[in-house]
Image (tube, rainbow, N blue to C red; front, side, top):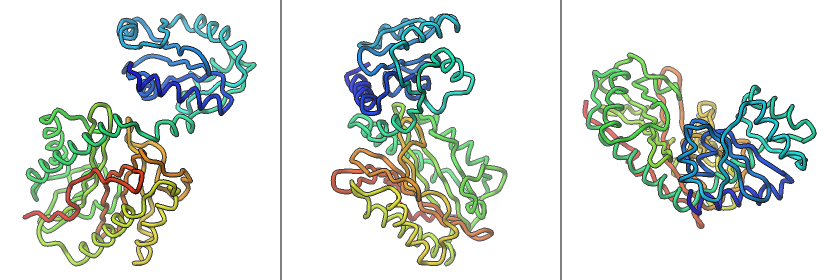
Length: 359
């Protein structure tokens, strides 16, 4: 646990002060990782508004926790009844307690019953706001993840050929990924031909034919941080219809890059792409959000969507992924990863947007 993790806990405690929270229970693996740097399949980080946080775990992780976590008290989990009794004793002075929205009912109800005097409130949005602005070291990891994703994509373009099925290409993806020592940040989306109109199509036995498109949505993980990118490529001579739709989507993508600036609302950036696509008469065929934040998880907050009023700040990382999906015809999505800077944004996806490959 380094100074950055301690600073994150201090930021959390400052946010708790503002929100009137006396304590926060963090059970999820991703939030434990974010605030401590320690990966475990079991544990709880209990943070009070003031004082030293407590990290609970079982015997499997006690040794590493004592070795790695400095500035945090380490305790071994007791039996369920005794553990709840300990919480109740600590909570005698707590009035408001924060919990993660991802808690199961089975996890939450015993806590609530043990500390029935306290008010319980979700800290999902509070934690998301803290994680939404990335540190310099996080941004470095995300850049390296995007670079690795670009390199893997290049490998795939050299390997994919018409005559292969989507499942064939998925197997090649995983072999090339493993050869580079990478893991994926989500199940890759591979859409051959007309399957590209399904924006979250699951790979199947559809064969990539000559003179047809292939939509690829993919990401990898480097040092725990995710990347995400989509390209829609064409094998053979692109049809006029494909070129038309691809050009419109690319225009929307580029307009977003020009529009992003600190101080803007995320929903206003979503409008930028939506207006362009709508002006060509295809507004009804772009019905997903424009983008989402990326970090330790592939989908984080904030998002470029109609409803997200979060104000952009330097250090936020958000995808820019407009698309048009015409049933039975053509589907195109172009996705880049953006870092919000002091004056605009930095595009960290460097794979070309227009890719035509031989049959």
